[in-house]
Amino acid sequence: MWPNFGVKFEAGWMSVVRHGDRIDLAHVIRAPGKRPEIKLCDSFRIESSEADALSRLAQSRGLKRYRCSILLGESDYRMAQVDAPAVSENERVQALRWRLKDVVDFPVDDAAIAVADIPTEGGRQASVFAVVAPASVVGERMALFHEKKIPLEAIDVPEMAVRNVAVLFEEENRGLAFLALTQGDGLLTITCRGELYLSRRIEIDTDDLARADEERRRQMLERLALELQRTLDNFDRQYGFVSVSRLLVASEFDCAGVVAALVENLYLPVLAADLAAVADFAAIPELRSAERQAHSMLAIGAALRSEA
Image (cartoon, rainbow, N blue to C red; front, side):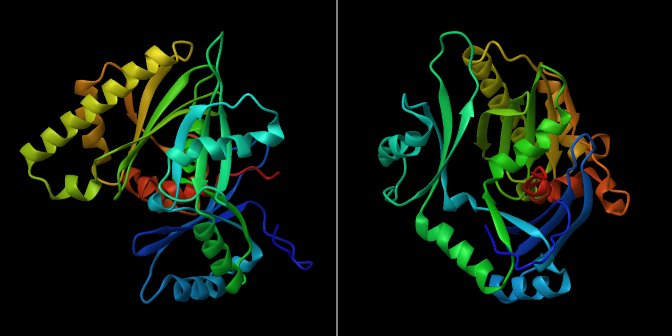
């Protein structure tokens, strides 16, 4: 835990998310029993180096006053679904460390490992999501924020950030598929009762969609729909006790067009995700745009942490 030396932090969490050549900030207050309130959502270009950008933001945005969270980059970690080890709670990380040796391409002896249970029913073998990152990667991120005197209190991954957003839209006792399309790969999650059941990256880029001609775009979206349908069918076979009611889409490019194309090719109801239905952001009118919401989706998700 970061020592606050008597400094009283602002309510909520501030996420500081590196995304290519920019840093996205989002400040969200998530009080019990209330809709999340997005107080800040902005992007800043990295002009010389990330360290320099953080120095400027620490001053201009007062980051020292916030509990800050970050996301690891896609190449900085591995997330694997494995059988839950039949050991006690305090032994499971060490047990998984041995299993993950054959899953990742870096040493796991001193790697940072986090575990999230995947709920199950009946006599199914219990599974977990194991997130593993090299100790050097985690250490470098912590050292950078320590150097800039920015209180870094949580390190997470994009899959969990999207999960945090998706669960806001869940219907009671129903599963929800959520597709986030940004400049990187598409990220599909399926959640139910606040728990993550599936996470899958799909190769499609909103920049590619924007550059493609009409025919190429149609082909890309048809291929996306096929991949989604296969994933949904496979999920239904594996988790028949979870009824997925709909697919929500957040896309940085032509969200309405992407939704319309998927509606034609999927049996599941497909809708655009609209944060206005589940969160408040009266002071940020630009977030009324579906594309702007998708642009900041990871940063908002990283800041959607409980007050506890």
